Image (tube, rainbow, N blue to C red; front, side, top):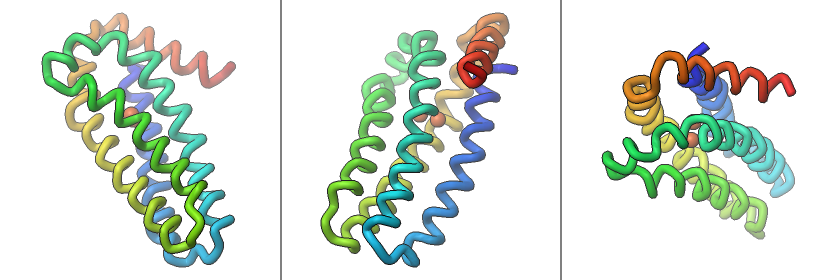
Length: 144
Ligand SMILES: [Fe+2]
Ligand SMILES: [Fe+2]
């Protein structure tokens, strides 16, 4: 499997999770419930971003730089995590709910950019041999 197909399959799971958070957010009545949701999303996103950073980015740094996306791409992973940890430290329920909603919107934008620009770029610039090898590395990481 190509690494881009593996990451896209993960995106499908995230889109379902984003939908679920957005539809249930107004029904979350306590800070505890909102934090549990933010923690779940954060722990899943950390694993996903790590796979992208470790497996894909080394092959794409030069091309992304030429496209002017290098800074933003690396920063976006950190920014999404920052937004989610802000949910944890929010004291009021309204603010926590808003921050969680904002974090989901930000994550959606980032995912959209990857699907439109980054993954197609990866398929253009990484050789077939390497893109399959990276997919194999992804599988091995998942199994370990
Ligand atoms: Fe990402
Ligand atoms: Fe992604």
